[in-house]
Length: 277
Image (cartoon, rainbow, N blue to C red; front, side):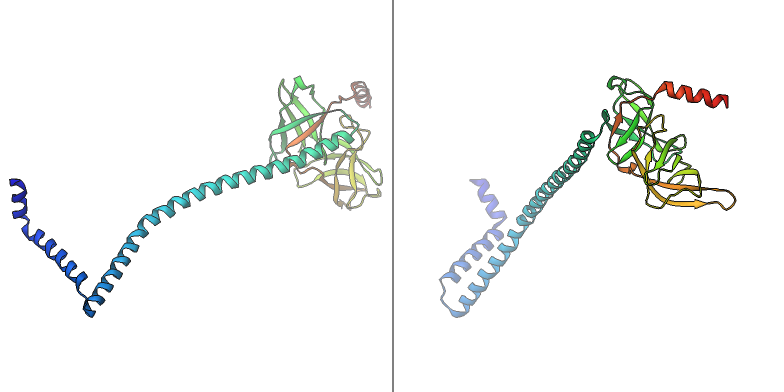
């Protein structure tokens, strides 16, 4: 009790100020004078304004919290949309692969592309199938669009394929319309090339290029690409034919491997004759 009086005496000015403010407010509330009413109205209005201003502060934090929640929801929805879009594209690709497999007369092994190079002189792709899946060297690699390349190395679980865009790649082809034959290769440029075709041969821009029956690797009549241009040399009797591949290697994700092996007897005989010439 003595402590209370000590505090009261020490802070008496503040207590008196609070007491006078309370009494003033009481007298103002009981007074019906017009001026007092105006003051009272103004005071109530100011109190209301201050209170509404103070209430904004927690609303700002609530809005920030809601914004964070909406942002997380938006990220989740975008992720879901991307997954659905990816599933749709995969479904389209798989439908094309299934249709190609059903309509083809060859036996296939399906494979996913798990690695590839497209900017080297000897471009390759890596597949998730190998010896245990029946894959062997020189088996053709194809897609619904056309020829991709051939198997050049194989392990138990994986295999490596040589793309058309590879300086070591060669195969016999022909122009589907006119049946003109040639050897398809790649010299490092934008397109594939068929060299040393006679100027008299009937080749036009837009012609379809297919594998020929002379190939030791590929079955005949597989689409390789389209003739994009030709060039002639005035000093000789031949022209070069430039071919755009039917397959877009930049978006290639799934392929088929034709489980056919070259006729070794035919190849051996041809090589023997060639050595004796």
